[in-house]
Each structure stands twice: as structure tokens, then as C-alpha cells.
Image (cartoon, rainbow, N blue to C red; front, side, top):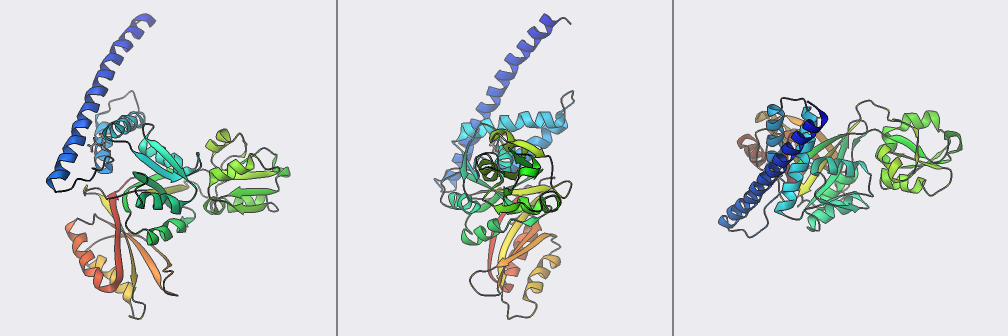
Length: 364
Ligand SMILES: C=C(O[C@@H]1C=C(C(=O)O)C=C[C@H]1O)C(=O)O
């Protein structure tokens, strides 16, 4: 086939693609109308949830299965990410809050999950993202929950205690590579800015290569890059994306201690999605410290109902000294029969129990 014929055929295919994209988008408007209708029937005049992670997971699985190449599955999924993002934005004006400024890993995770068609709103602190969701200032919020090298993000856990009404809607995994960004050579750097998590993930490299530079904690890795772009003899542990955004050089690429360093995030909203058959649930509770074995009795309930626990974290309750808030993640959806009866039973061992939400399990 010659060049002109190939271009002509591409142009014909483009015409069909645009028509098909709009046919699909019109159907998602029908989906929006159907969601409103069924809410009305249930006696609610609230706005329906437009981002449905369970449905998106099914769409991604479907298109992966349909794909015959030559495009890779990942390429087809990236295109579908944008198609679904566009259909969400047709159904309603959606805003997504994240820990800013632009270029943070939270921003990258939010963009990966929601695509280009939605509006993103940066907040200075994780607490403020969660508060913005609680106050319905934004439709959804995205916050980090844990890193595979450095563990739980305690600001997020503590904010759940303060805003227990927000609901988890989805989980997102993002591979994270930290780099040293600066306008200076390594030998001239006197001070390094970063987020405590990023310092934790690159501590060994810093001990070895910049043992005498002061480490100053700031609210995000992008904020660190912003500071390093203005202050003399400073650097930031941050993402390479921020080198471009804040006009810095990548002095050392990938200073992260562990390979496969990954951060997990939650998408928060006003409600959780329906069960998909492959979900996880996060619970938060305190137990009565004076009862011997209270925590053990609570956790035993899950074993009894054959429910797997995938994670446990604790934070000081901040209400009573030496009392703890436990965060337990289990396999299953709060509406699954076995989980629902376990939750009923566990109440008798807990002083208070909050189901923070259920979300489709993502591979990572
Ligand atoms: C169309 C819907 O809303 C959104 C858009 C989707 C799509 O375009 O396929 C899928 C899930 C939702 O995030 C839906 O709920 O089905």
C-alpha cells in the first residue's frame, strides 16, 4: 500500500472512530439518566455517583480480552481510560482533590485513574483533601495510604479518625521512583527538602551520598522541588516529573532503597461502590483495653467467618492515653453475606466500629 492510500484509509477509520466514540458517549448519557431515575425511585433526590470503579474494572478486563493487537493491552487500556474519563465528564462536572502542588505522586496517581477530562484541585495537606471530600467541596479525593517500603501514611489514617463519614471508593497503585533534583552538583548541596515518606524511601542513599546535608521535611515532594528551584544550594527528593515542572536537573536518578517501590492510594467519595465479587473493605475500631484479649477476640471473628485479613495498622486514639485505633483491611465487600455477619458479630468486641468503605481489588 502506498503512503497516500494508507493515509486515506486512516482518515476513513478516523471518521468511524469519532462516530463510534460519540455513539458510546451518548449511551453513557443514558447511563447517567438511568442512575438518576433509580435514585428517584429509591426516594432520593441526591446526585448519582458518576465514577463507578467496579464497572470500569469490568470494561478494562473486557477490552483486554477483546484486544487482538498489534496494539498492546496497556495502550488500549490507556485509550479507554480517556474514553471513560470523557464519559464521566459528560454525566457531570467532576472535581478531584489531591495533595498538591502539581507533580506530586498523588497528582500522578489521580491522573492515571481519572484521565484528562476532569478538573483537578490541589490541596496543601492530606488532611485538607479529606476535609474537602467530607464537606463535598470536591466530588472525589485521592490520598496515599501506604508505601511498600516505608509503610502506612499516618496523616491519612489520623484524618480518617477525624472525618469518619468519608467513604473509600477505589484503590490505586503507583510505582514510585524517587530522584535527587537540584540546580547544583552533588558536592554543592547543603540542604535537601522532601516529604517524610520520600526521605524514608531513600534514607540509605542519602546517608551514603549526602551525609552532611540537612534534611528538611515539607508537605509534599512537589513542594520540595518548588523550594529547590528558588533556594540556593538546595535539592529535593522528588519525582522526575517535577524536574521538568520546576526547572531542575536530575542529579541522581532512582535513589529509592527498595526495588518495586509502590505507593497505594485511596479514592474517597460520599459512598462506596456495589460489590463486584472481588473486593476489599477497610474497618476502623477501638477495643476495650481492660478486657483481656479484646483485640484477639475481635480479629478471631474474621477467622471464624473465613475472612482473610490483608493488613492491620494502629494509631494512638488521641482521645484516651494508650488506647489505639485499629485499621483492619479484609477481603470481601461489607455487603457480602459473610462480611455483613462478621461485622455484626465484631461490634460486641469494639467500642466503636466504622466501615470506611469497600472497593474493587486492583492488581499491582
Ligand atoms: C458510564 C458509566 O459511568 C462511568 C463511565 C464508564 C464508561 O464510560 O464505561 C464506566 C464507569 C463509570 O466510571 C457507568 O457507570 O456505566
